[in-house]
Length: 286
Image (cartoon, rainbow, N blue to C red; front, side):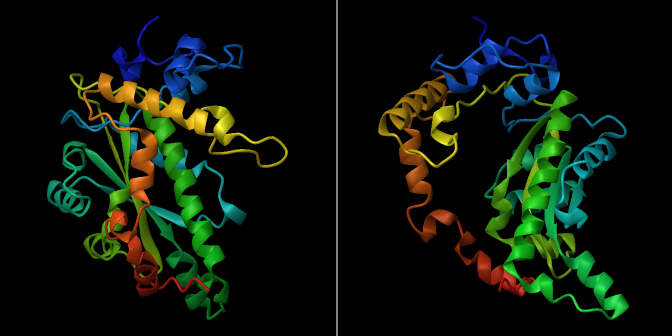
């Protein structure tokens, strides 16, 4: 069977075998191969994060196409409580890379998209009309804005990958959201939820399709079942270590990595003060 790690992103089409991509995603071969299938599903199933980019510029109109896709995502009550800042300036990308712990792909990629939970637009509209907007001070609206930003960004990712481009999310911008806000000139009530690198993947670095937890771990029917089955977690630990070996990464069980990531406040890389930073940014979160 063909190894999906050897395939370029631009080669993903509807003719890609469902069985091959499902096997790459789950590794254990126990999942059905008779599922509805088309080109969009092939792109989704072949997703992988890209952390090495060519310096090539993006084709004209790419940014606008990604924004079109993003704006086609669902948005709660049509409030559209998100914005995105497109960053191409090398110096500005270098600062974002520093904030994110030195991730070199932020500098390499020709385009860095910073996705915002943005309530400032609604606040400005209310202020101009001298109308109340007390609802913006509640956790619900911050949640709406963060969800809106995530939905929009994922649409952009799918669009980019359908065009043969690579992407990777940068959650580490939350290491210092105040500095990100100053760098990008964000107004109050706008917060950088994450970044997204977009570019042409370096051909010499073709990352594999990273395995995920088995569907039965995350899929519950009618009522919530067992989500941390020890045997299923053990199988996934094995699959991840196999993947790490293929990618020349340090082998470590996923369960060890995941628990270390939530062990204490230090494991959050400065994001343990996020509530205080959001308050400073104008989000009151009642």
